[in-house]
Image 1 (cartoon, rainbow, N blue to C red):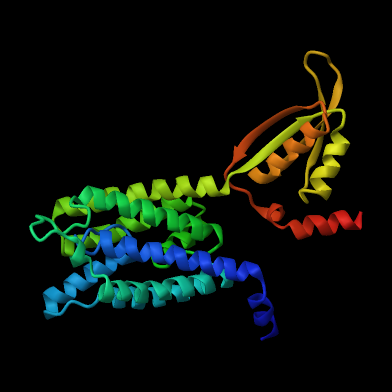
Image 2 (cartoon, rainbow, N blue to C red):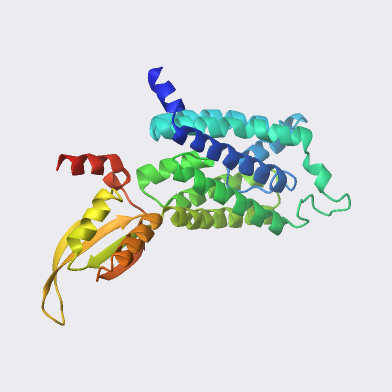
Length: 313
């Protein structure tokens, strides 16, 4: 209980809670306004829920509310998330997954999509065209997915399956989303004609690409290589001010044949800007190269670990 109270007192908890809530609001609007009206089935649990709702209407004459089906399916997948991915991811996804259904229920009750569709429309579509609906849905959902993955959460449903595949088979998260989504898309044959299923498959593929694009943009780090006689001054700044580690290599100049020290470090974009400002302000002569790194694992993410080791020295 004490640990829970300590977590509730941190700004990190409330910031991430706000991010998750906004992300799920965007997801709920994307699903309800761009998938539900046209019954466009993209490879998501929301899409699968639309299929289940349509099948229940065909078999029993009563369509189960999509929001209710989403709630039930997500509840089952959350158990998998907790045990197979981790407690933090599982608990965060409990929150995001369980609020999606109620959020959609609010939209169904107070802001029904029927208000925004022209009565003479050939196809029930908010944008008036299935392809426009598809583009809007993919962009909104992919942005929400990338932001939630960044804080070790997800929109629930398919993201849980994708995260499991990503963790244990080491596929890119976008590839994981596409593979799991394609399987779900094929269930749409139960309620949709062939061309609608093909559109859904294309949308699922694009969703995977866009998720990878957004994720890479959010996770990009800078690998910085610096050759300078003042390398120790730069090293101290990186360790003491930026609280990052670095590696030193002895190198030999190909033209001058002089031996020098090359310093290499991985930094965030903001930290890289700070480092460049420090070098420029102090007029340090240096040869610098920098490149993008999209994935980093291990102790780099733990600044406390680096600081503790530095203090011991």
